[in-house]
Structures are given as structure tokens and as C-alpha cells.
Length: 81
Image (cartoon, rainbow, N blue to C red; front, top):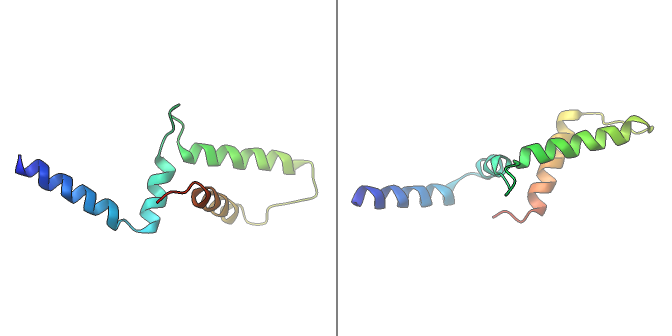
């Protein structure tokens, strides 16, 4: 019984002490009620944006930076604490 209590306290403490990067990675792996993870949603946004840009004069210079920036923006706007 005490082991369960100490384990729960450890888990709560760990959650509060997670680095911002750890919290972001956990958020990416979260699923909604349909079982779709945030990382899948971000990838779908990127795919859709890239399709829109195919027939335009606009180009993304750095794909990795674009992915990081888009994921960070959505994360910040999702009000995750």
C-alpha cells in the first residue's frame, strides 16, 4: 500500500519537474478521442500546406525548421500547462 502511494507521489513530482522539451514531446504523443496523435495532426497540416504551395511561387527554405515552428506554434496555442 505504501509503495503505491510513494509511486504516485513520484509520478506527480516527475510531471511537475518535466523540462519544457519533455512536456512538448508528451504533448506530441497525446491522442484525441479518435485516437489521432498530435504529431499526426501536425504532419497532416504540413502535408496540406505543402500541397497548397506546390502551385505557387512560395517555397519553404528549411523543411525541418518549418516543421518545428509549426509544431511549436500549435503547442503554444493549445494552452498546454
